[in-house]
Image 1 (cartoon, rainbow, N blue to C red):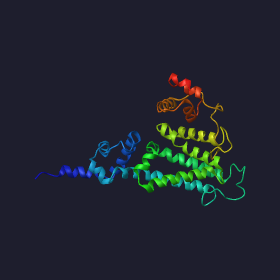
Image 2: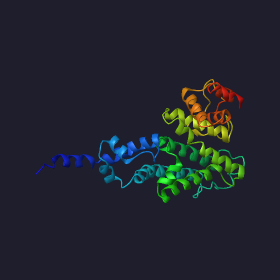
Image 3: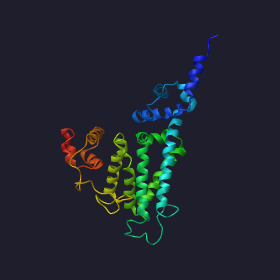
Image 4: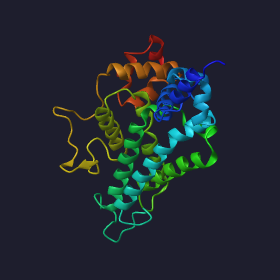
Length: 282
């Protein structure tokens, strides 16, 4: 009778305690690069170094892997928004903490809640930036209804906190723009240094909500964020290699110079210098 030693060794290896985490790490990479639907369980198994049945031992299906990846992100998102709601001084996060939080109270509870929500959401996106490369639509189609409902509800809550108390239509639209612009740069520049990426994204949100050096800029323990030494107001006149790459990728996908300039925070003239000549006719 043939010895089962090799099979036993393989079983032990494939069900080792760290195998689940290795499957999740590899899946994050593959989903981010190829997309959820274009990544097979066999490919995941090969990259992890185990058999396909070993992957199925830990996760009954590919959607279960995605659910396990999304769950920590949703948990951290909920915690970040709970902290932002607490910063407003109101249990429901409405920002209605009393008469002192009226018009002109730019540093009041609702403003603290706004920036706590913006920075909290951004930090979660940065932490899970490689998973974020997976389109939200893919998450909606691949995960169970309750999982995506959590993500949708978290985004609605973030918009509520950023819009502030008693917002008009324009304020609600601007809040949705501010929340939406937290994710795209993280996806485009996922491999950039996180501190620099975080500051650049927050600067873009400040410009949308308050202007280049608005009074409501997010601040830390040492006070409001300061402009870079020697910095000038307005758009930068040069683009980094990463920005040039992003601009060309957006152009290839059909975006015009105007849209690219707005997304990257530079002038159209700056974008023109790095795009094919025919773009000049826009």
